[in-house]
Length: 155
Image 1 (cartoon, helix red, strand yellow):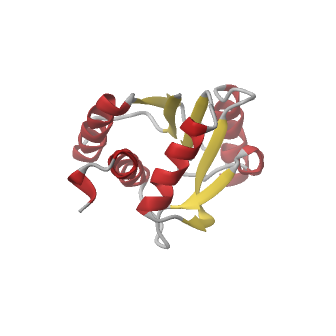
Image 2 (cartoon, rainbow, N blue to C red; image 1 turned 90 degrees about the vertical axis):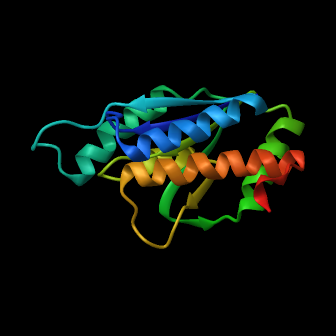
């Protein structure tokens, strides 16, 4: 199963992005998680709706027709760490070829991306900066793998 994080953003080197990459590196022993950067909408002419739509087209172009998609959005359901683990294990047991987790940019996610998603999940009741959301998701994926495999990280 291919697991990816599709994240809108330029991927500047910051302490947060370095920490997120550390968790992605740790996931390598569990089959790996690929980080795919999606270019953000550009220019002052992109208002929130237009920017989200533009980014949504880019996101959807990277998602395969049979992929299971989990979109991160503040209006989504709350998942626990064990629920993340269950998502990973169920996808593997069902033979899902691709599992894509999606993080929008400053404009949020377009309605088209949320409609395409199999699950919409919020990382926090608070609004998180993009790079912090990426770090939280990457850590939870690593934690989910360790829970699924019965490893001690979670405890």
